[in-house]
Length: 114
Length: 117
Image (cartoon, rainbow over all chains, first blue to last red; front, top):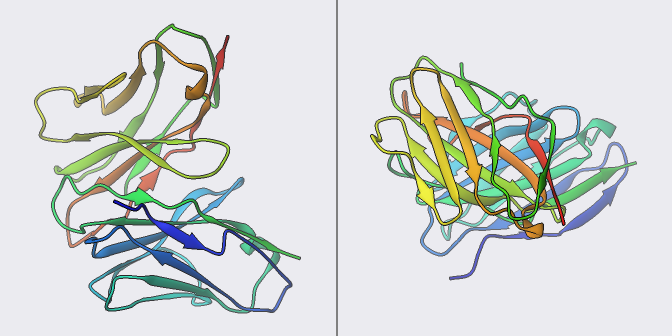
């Protein structure tokens, strides 16, 4: 079974621009979650999508948004980029149901904001 | 609110020896799951092991075992027979199951493990 894929792997943007990151989950998984990882704040939950609906949201400003398509692929968008948005963005997929549900992560997208 | 604490920022271990990575957690939810992930320098998070709050036995997966002490709210990862490839960051994480919390994982700060040849 193919793992979680994320594109692009690396991005360089300038302040004020917007960016879209893509995540393709493991086949059959209906839940996609996004996390931001920075040296200062560690790993923080952004949001989760399950069957095209946002099921949970972390404490991030509205500049961070996402969506999920009918094939479970998900995109994350960040508008009006700030220097502090430089981070590794990790996507994880799972079945989305059950206490033992385990999230499997992709390789991440490393975003640098100049 | 949930909180995960990993008190060891970095650790060294000799190749072929066992090592324990500490994790304590705090939650008021009676039902939760605990996870350990490995993150090599490449960045990808690799799932290692899972422990449910109602599991009576400690979880094991190959060389990984989880020392779960519910009363102490600790879920330490034990790696037996360390290998050079075990050098990485290790994260403990928790998922509560209440109020449709879905798949939100709360992570600890991580422990950097370095295996010496």
